[in-house]
Amino acid sequence: MSVRKLFLLPGDGIGKETMAEVRKFIAAMNEKFNAGFETEEGLVGGSAYDAHGAAISEEDMEKAQAADAVLFGAVGGPKWDSVPYDVRPEAGLLRLRKDLALFANLRPAICYPALANASSLKQEIVEGLDILIVRELTGGVYFGSPKEIIDLGNGQKRGIDTQVYDTFEIERISAVAFELARTRNNKVCSMEKRNVMKSGVLWNEVVTATHKARYSDVQLDHMLADAGGMQLVRWPKQFDVIVTDNLFGDMLSDIASMLTGSLGMLPSASLGAPDPKTGKRKAMYEPVHGSAPDIAGQGIANPIAMIASFAMCLRYSFNMIKEADTLEKAIANVLDQGIRTGDIMAEGARQVGTTEMGDAILAEFLKLSA
Image 1 (cartoon, rainbow, N blue to C red):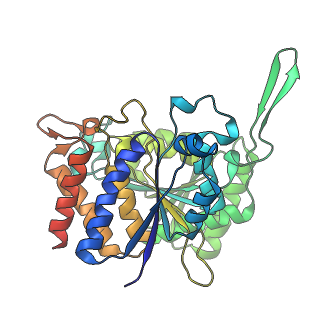
Image 2 (cartoon, rainbow, N blue to C red; image 1 turned 90 degrees about the horizontal axis):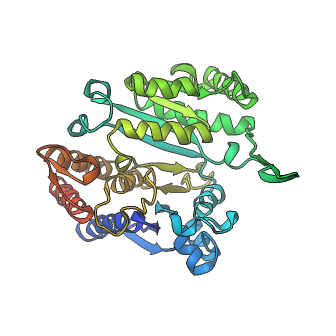
């Protein structure tokens, strides 16, 4: 039996509650299917700062490096608003992405049929929606240098963030988007701001050249990122795969999340490059939602995004395609049964808490796996 090493980082707020539901699936798969998962658990974000004075400890970074995959909950909350910038909770997440070289962030936006009326958009706009946003994750304005606040005197300050991209960064993320498009509907839309940003001009040029050299069989369109945001809420089903930079990917994927009815529904995968010797990728899986401190500890958080992130882990890190498909089908079936957490509640449905939703999906998963 092969050993599959998972490193769990629940983090803060509802991250702890939703991760608890994923632990049930790991335990059940080990017991029922001899899956061979081995888990360790660490601290990240505010909880790590409280324990170590850092957003993630060196020991936990070593464990993340050694794992086959990292499962990440959420970080942050008002408690840590005043901590120094370099040890703020989000710094732990950024360090994981950077040190593990997780350059490709995959954020699917799928509108389950049972939730078509839960979106803030009209049902016909979102019903059947299935798009994938491929976001560059380790470059751009979040990591560019200089990044600082300068005191200009006379009560004036200047905040500086630098948008930087090199050719190879754009080539590799666009290649991921084209490869994934080949497994879907063979369409890619690249989004940037070439009309006002030099990095956008380069982005457009490199994506176009990569397409011409290696992926001419895939349909490629270009769109300015602000227009893309508008089109996502106007007619999102025009898109299949969207590829974009770190900053715009952050914003556009949050827009896409609301098309599905709730931030609590969206998983994500962050992948590194394949190892030349083993072919394995460093990988981290996390829900798109944050730590939601306003509802933390109440047992009402939606665990579906965390559970669906585990399904992505099964698919991309362990090639457990059948199991991933079954888990995603279990989520859809439970929603079809009218079981809802409060964020996706609808008239006539049965409202449940975090634990009950996790239990319902696990029971359906085991039923479908029998």
